[in-house]
Image (cartoon, rainbow, N blue to C red; front, side, top):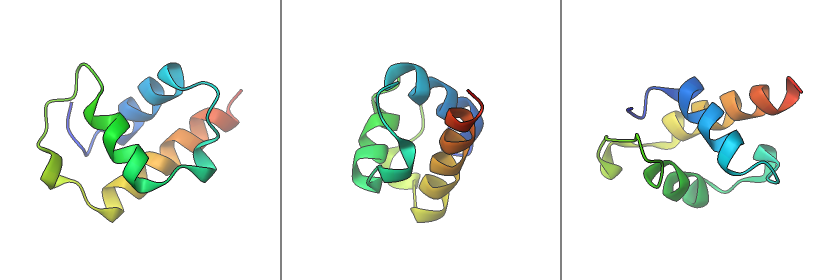
Amino acid sequence: MKWSDAEEIAILLRERHPEIDPRYVRYTDLHRWVLDLDDFTDEAQRSGEKLLEAIQMAWIEEADSD
């Protein structure tokens, strides 16, 4: 899984952190949590604000679908 896999990452983050409201997640925490995912294989420095924002928006959509 790479940084560009925002929807897949969002699903895994929602499963791993169900108590978290993704609207209030800091990018530093989001970055760390993505790197901690078992299937994540991309390099840490390849992330950026736009990629983290895309992941956060996908996570918000996942959370709102409940």
